Image 1 (cartoon, rainbow, N blue to C red):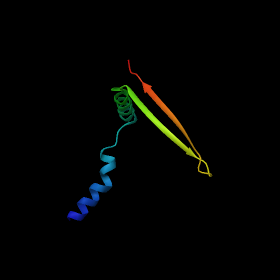
Image 2: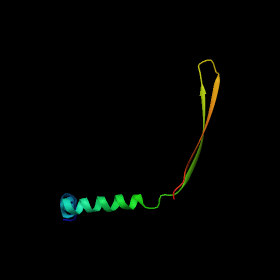
Image 3: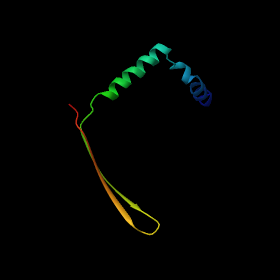
Image 4: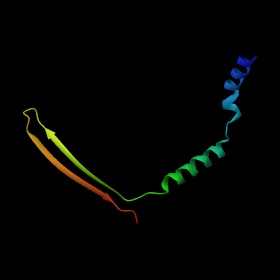
Length: 69
């Protein structure tokens, strides 16, 4: 009996929580709005070392700063 009930819940589960297209669209829009909130300034410093097959190295430095106003 218990196994049958668990199987029934697993099969019927997705349909029980299904959303209308309007509800799903609203949820997506709200999540997109939340993701856009809270952006902060950031800074990145990179060092790239390139080596050729002869073992010679070339080093490049890159610094990127983003200021949120």
